[in-house]
Image 1 (tube, rainbow, N blue to C red):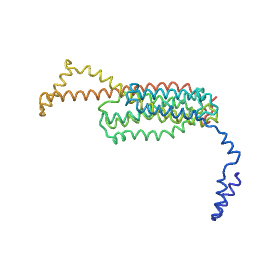
Image 2 (tube, rainbow, N blue to C red):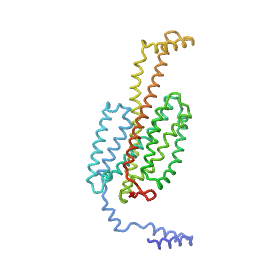
Image 3 (cartoon, rainbow, N blue to C red):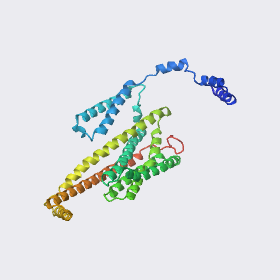
Image 4 (cartoon, one colour):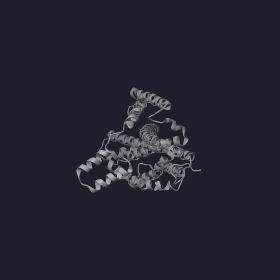
Length: 364
């Protein structure tokens, strides 16, 4: 049905209320595909091998990321098997898709440095976004004793800032080169993560946690839209669907890897710092002995026996030691995220220039 027929059909429906007219027009729109269209669909070849390799590889990767820390990673035969399975499937997927005429994922697009860099940035964006989204509420609940509701309230202001920034950034892309906006976003994010290493402590107030979360998301608002825009720069228009699919895939995988990464780093660094702090918590250390004796005296005055009071004092000191080790682990994790964002900041200057307001055309 051409445009003239469509207009006539709409006019018919407007002027008539008879069900017969409605059925006639509906039948015109609901006609089945022509013979040539059906033949073309039969000729369409699906990449079943690529789909199978992608499903098994990514599925195994998601499971091992979710269960890795819980099962002690390579200390578990199950996790080791998933690692091997995921690696074999994903490597085979790349090789298969490289030679496939109708690939489910066009891996040849990664030969384009700009697209490959944008994909890496989207992956890292997913890592940093979900890492900070996991770190802050976990820190507030496990070490500061916040309820889930109170921790959510502390993070909610950051969501509002991100909601306001996104449309503003979209307008900026029509006036400023996307790579400059991206560089600013990564720099702001790196500085925010470094600031978090200085601000995180066991005496942080609710307002301080709220402002810290706001600082952490300011840079994120300048990254979503520009990086997505840069991913299309220099890519033929017929590849737009592939760009969108790969971009979403990279960001989603980054979120999974980021969540698994921070939980592992926190657990391992907590153990590391706890061992270092325990070395100082010895009876031959006068500071430790004086602290334990002072606490024991306090518990004795509260009605406990001497032996029980001393045991309670040791338990309280150990609890404090664990919390301090946990805090140091969070500081280390934020430092890793700060360095990762800084690397992306320098990579931003290697991206191609786009024409602001000119879509995804490369600037001369």
